[in-house]
Image (tube, rainbow, N blue to C red; front, side, top):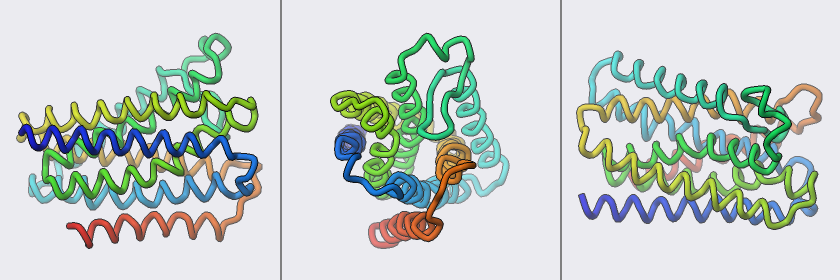
Length: 254
């Protein structure tokens, strides 16, 4: 267990660093081409969709040999994210504000963006932790993949402050804050599901459902938001680049 905790801490530090690095890159947003954000989000979506199945949902099916624990877990992950979306005020790059209307003008935009990044990263942290509780190899693969996609995701989420509000330090602070939150969830996930092995299929599928929710409900609509001009070829290429990267990591290291 001590070795697993140390590994969880190292993976947590890795994803925290990668998220912070992505936020740091937002400082150079004036040099980023117009399609850069869409490519970044599409790449992250490709990684997360494959990781949701290969590292989380399929192992949950393998453990339980039954549909019901997996189905319940996926539904639970989606339900938790729906509640977070509904009750935690946050703001997206294109889609704008979400959450209780009474907080819309009472909380600074920086914190709204921070909350959005944290909501994105919490299921990713849990996914790494629970997959590590299932298998060290799966945990490492998931951690590497999510860490890699955290760079473009961190850049995409931090861009509003770096461009629209002309902030320079705040994107880095946002990345560090959300990265620390993700690291905490990695450690908590591996501790809880290591001691509660019977709940492991529920935890794996819950993390998978939460990641799918973030991808389908948040990332893809951000890319194809009505009124935006998008380069569909660039977006498709970004998605499949992330898709193939996760497949490669899963087959090469698995």
